[in-house]
Length: 570
Image (spheres, rainbow, N blue to C red):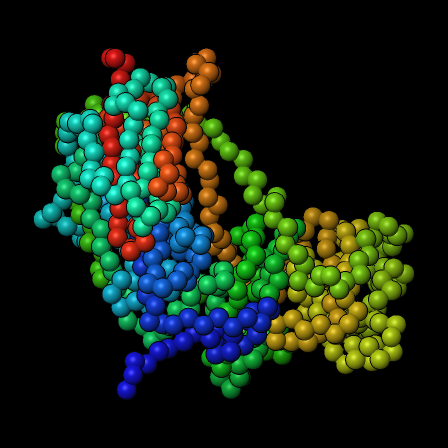
């Protein structure tokens, strides 16, 4: 019998009609995916920025658009869990400031994708990180610490002018010695077309203190689970399941909605499978970490659980003991003082990414908009619907509020009357229409009405009424049944590295510059054509190292290093 292949047909097999676009995505499970991680430092102080670079390799084509990077300590505490957007070259990057309450010790960085967790041999890429905190006593080692093979940190001389084997990519500097705040010119060139591609270039001071052995990296297995993880091909996946205390209730085909609120809100609708599981595809950017999931049910109360894409390696993580040599005292003091000065003068960049997000409404361009400031304002939503909203009607009975979409065409109107409309306020689906009648119309900016049947996800609605408030801040009442408010792990925004420019020697002359990281570019495009990269040294003196790393077209790692010195003694 030939080799069996298991295919993911995400729409038709796992969750029908999840994707509004109707695309069928097929992935051969035999295609393996392996994430790799590079960092700007293996030994770092609390308060410093850890910069990292992710490369996701596959044997055939790119699969995942999302990778995960997490940092653990030996107690099991997660210091961060990042979602990292992966570009078409399989590259992503991020950063994390080591907190000032992180104690001296050995930490683990784990990198993975949802798809790589299906691998039996290489689900996770693990890398050790050594943190030094001069202000908090070293932690008492947990039982997981490896006492037999510790990391011993000692002072070491750093030679300059050292270059690794550069037969593949030429990395040259215009000189070997620079003065503080001097311009450095670095030249790059690939020797063959096979080496062309995107690489990571990092330039950082080589610390005088080094561990007595290289920090370890390893590939970890996934715990044995009766589960296959879906690949995040078109964007992020949010999955979970619903439960009820009544075991006779069928959990299949239950409608579930997801709202990510805000000015450019996201609204998704899907239905559960036979096990009560649901899944949403987030194929548009969003600018908040808040999210709301609802089960559309009037008669049954469900509990909602959202899956957490946390790492579950089969191996027990082994943390080495970190021993600081007594001779490090003065060096640690000097480094901590310089770091405090650097952070005090560090420029804070305002995040403007969210302002640029302009998601199209899911019902565009079929809606008629009623901007209430264009009409006479009425004291209630009931009167507003009567006097302003020609394409919808609200009726308040003693026991219920009824809302319908209206169409002047009698044929369409007859079809609309057979179906309930979809009603949302700031993207949050409304099941209790009294929330609309009790809404203060002064808070409402505009009301969009789609006066025709509308299929969204797995359901056909009798039109759509979408209300948008002025502050985009509508929330359901606390303890609303069949509702879960949760914090969404959103992809980190790749902050651009701040490169100093001292072309004008008087610029910043009175501001100290104690940067140890002179340059960082996670996407340097290397070709057979020579290119020049320029940056400036800081006030720090010592040995610095330029490191170019990545993977060639055959998947082989390429690593080129070049050291140089910064000194006032020319």
